[in-house]
Structures are given as structure tokens and as C-alpha cells.
Length: 479
Image (cartoon, rainbow, N blue to C red; front, side, top):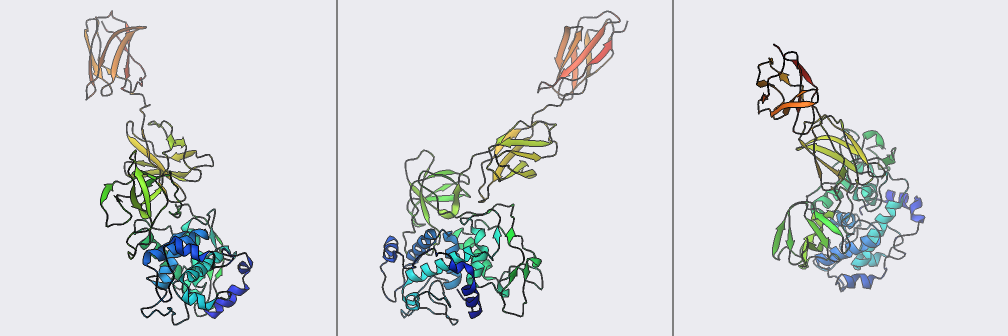
């Protein structure tokens, strides 16, 4: 946490430090935490990469922070998560940042422990960022809770300092500040926790949201403190429970052991799996994986495999969609998650979208669709999880045009005319049907009848393959 003394003054004067800390003492059950991760502390010796992975994960979960966020910070601060250098000396940066979490200028912590106790260092860093989340002077995302990764954008920023250099927008250009500390942390999350298989949703910043002097080191003033985001956000993937159904977010491999060195079985995107137990870490302790492995069972299989947390998300059910016909201007339905984004597609093209209401019902405006065409409808919840799609076939509810019948005389035995392709044309006198036939592909029809008396009124109608009947054409039999 590379901060300045100006930042220290701000932190000490901010009310959030008066709140009860996440860890009453950052040494909380440190020996048990180390034991859980298979780490035996030894002066000057770094834990293995997977032991650090475990220590960061356990501390984050204890503090109710997405482990992805804590690992992203640790990656930005110390790169390879080292507490000690090659000579066994504590790593201290030129500006005084200490250890894995590069803690700088913090009162209330034991400096000697920050240097020599990696568990203490990690827990201290996690406590600091957790307290940043409690600050009431930092912007938040409306309706989002602490398990949503994007909601930690400003606490991550504050971990390094709410200085002009970390403004989300470059004041001079109005462009996104890719050099901001929090942007780098979020990039690490995408790269190492999600393996670049997905992107975090950007917050819709405007230059006018922030006030600061780029030539000064004074803290940024946040003029907007609440952001509304309608696009899907991303929840931490560390909370799946045994027996829970999940689906794959892309094509992936099921492994026989929690490591990429083991044998594999390829599976497709949207494959349903059942969580078979708690997640674990890569069995190759030196491997630089930041994700975890979940034991899973595919389908009705009794065999357990392992899959990276990067490639799974919770399983949702498809929405229920009402009948759609070729006159409808809306698609309606239910059983989407309340507040989720519902989308309807014709082929690969999106033709309508809406937000499900508090009961999960939805109504989407669409262009009128052709009969017998197919539509797919799905929803995406606030954690960027996409439901299976419901498919509906557009019903034909449009009656065909009235048939065109050629002249009929009192000697006609074969009536000809034109009607909708493949429709059935019926001729009737009064309530009695005197003949019927099916039109061909081009709409030509030929109907055999008994000759009718001159002056008889013959009524012709066409019924299409969907059962829609046209209006009537009346023909008077000529002499």
C-alpha cells in the first residue's frame, strides 16, 4: 500500500477508523490459519505460492471480501507475493512499503511483525482494505453488496490513496485513467483470477464526477457518490457450496486432480456440474495459479473431477415465456430473477431487452416477427450469470387473404383459382360443402364439384396450415 503521509493524515481523521475492525486483532488465530494452509512459519523463508494463495483467500473470506480483490491488490503490491528477498530479509520498498501487502505509514500495527510475519502482514492488509469499504465518503454502486467485485473499486483506490494520480478519469483529456492504481488491480483480477475469460463491468464515470487539482497532492473530492449500473456485475466465485449446481462459462477441461498436470475430459460451455465439496488449491505448490479448484460431478456421474473456479458460475433456470404470434409487438413472460436483464434474440440479433420486475415478470418490446420464426429469450443477473435460453416459435395468427376464384358456370365441374400456398380452399353452398382442395406451392388450386344451377351463390374460403381461415369470396354461378 504505497501511500503518503498526507494520506495517513486523512485516514486518521476519517470516521471509518472508529468502526470496529474486521479483525479485532490481525493476529487472529494465526497459527490455525497457517495450519489450514499447510504453512509452517520460518524466519526469512517465503511460503510456497499456493500457501500464499491460501493465506490470502482465507483472510479475504474471513473479512467478507472477494478473494479476487485481495489477490489483485497483493499482485499489484508485491508481484510474486514474496515477503522475503533471496537473502531472507524482509522486502521493503523505497517508500517504506512492507511485505506482501506493502503496508506503509499505518499506526496500530506492529512494524516488526509486518516485516517478519507473513500471516500478520496479509491480515493487516486485508483489514485495511475492509475498513476502506466502510468509509462513507467513497462512492458506491447502487444496490450492490460486498460480494460484488466491482463494488470494491473505490476501496481498492483508497488502499493506495485518493490522489489525483488515481482519478478514474484524466481531467485534462476526459479519458479513462488506465494508470490508476485500482485499474491495474482490476486488470490483475481479470488476468489471473478469471484467466481473461471475462471482463469486469466498467463504472460509468464522467469527468465532472471528480474535482481535483492535477498539480496538487490534495485528495480528490467525489462529487458523485452513487452509481447506477444496469449491466451485469460479477460476484466472487468462492462461495459455491456442496450440492450446488453450477454451469461452465466456456469450453473447459475437467481434471482428475486439482492441477493442469492431471488427465482431463473436455466439456462444452453451459455444461451443468454439481459441486462435490470445498474448493482446494493446486497440488503443485509452486504453480502460480491464483484461482482455486472445485471438486465437481457432471450430470449423473458418481465420479469426481476438478475444475478451475475461473470457468464456473451458478446455474440459473430458463425463463417462462408466453405464446408469441406474428401480430405481437411484445414478448412477455415470468420466472426470471427479479431485477435481471432479459434479452430476446432472433437468430444472433438482439431485438428487445428489459428489466424483470420484483416478481420476475417481464415485457419486452419487439418488431413484429414472421410466423414460424424462432426467438430465444434469456436473462443475465446482477452477478453476470446468464440463464439458459427459452426458445419459442412464432405462431401464425394471421388469416390468409380471401381466395380468388375464376368464373363458374352452370356446366363447371372443376373450379380453379389462387390462394395462400398450401392452404385448403373450401367451396360451400349455404352450409353444405360442395368441394375442397389444397393449394400447391405457388397457390394454384383446382376443386372438383358437381355443376350448380345458374344464380347459385358459392362461398369460397381458405384455411392455412395454422388453422387461420380467410374471409369469404362469393361467386355467382353463371348460365
